[in-house]
Image 1 (cartoon, one colour):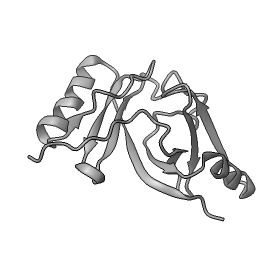
Image 2: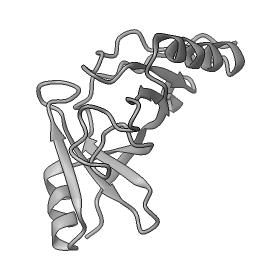
Image 3: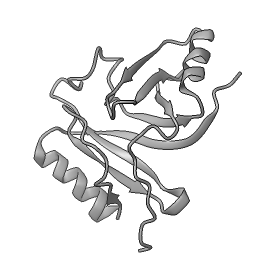
Length: 152
């Protein structure tokens, strides 16, 4: 039975790790694209970066701009394939336990991180047949603060 995806939550994008790189990325996404930073998101230890709102009201989603070290991996990585800073699309699912069971039943390789973005967070990462990384997590379990942004 297919996993029940509830929403597109965010898209993870890699940026550099220096403060200069982070500032350059923030300036591009705010000044050029007109996006707004989510100041309510918690910082993730060892992963420099920030979250940006995309859209407004009920159509709001986010992009997460994440820094990596000089080797191209975050310190949180277990391996080159098990790195939470890999570019990815994050989907909120109706039931993360059922989602993990479905991946196991189908024999799909996946990995998970618990507690990275909050004490109750449980993120499951899987690759599609083309190597794209998909993050799955329980709907409502993240610390995002979706708000209606002023129209520009």
